[in-house]
Image (tube, rainbow, N blue to C red; front, side, top):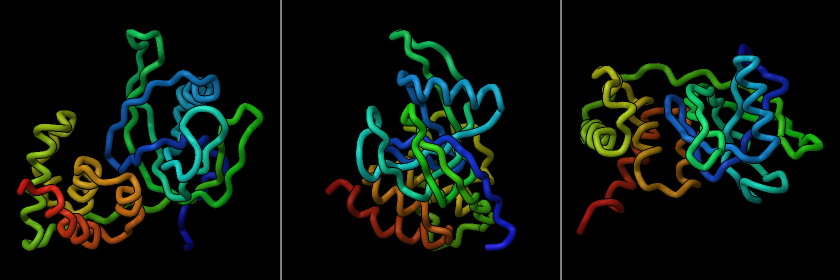
Length: 200
């Protein structure tokens, strides 16, 4: 795996959700360890890793995270009506954590290897239905993508990520979609699960 970038010390935020490259996630921050993490990332203009929780909970004792996650960069933050810090993050590169450790305050940190982005790949005609479904889902569920260039709907990786985050998949299924490295395989598996969501 020569040429892959190693980040030796990245804060990790285990969640019961999966963040995809290019995706958006709104979070409310209240635990001191994560408030400190947000301050650190803002000060250093750096990101943190979002990983699916395999065991444990989002609050309290450190949870066991999935090894593959996504670097999140803070794009907006404000104080909510409840007085809590609210942030919006955008998904960047995927990574695999090769080592994790918990600090005394419970914040997980890891050494992570960044994955290269999926190369741009034209969607084959047999997946044209998925392009249409992605457009409908974005229109109704993801207004922040409404101004995406039309060319994005021709890119297998982008459409696959949008479908994986917007279709009502289990988080374990979403994690599998995140870990796939072939955009066309991701589209094929998403096509195969579509019948579950069709109204009878």
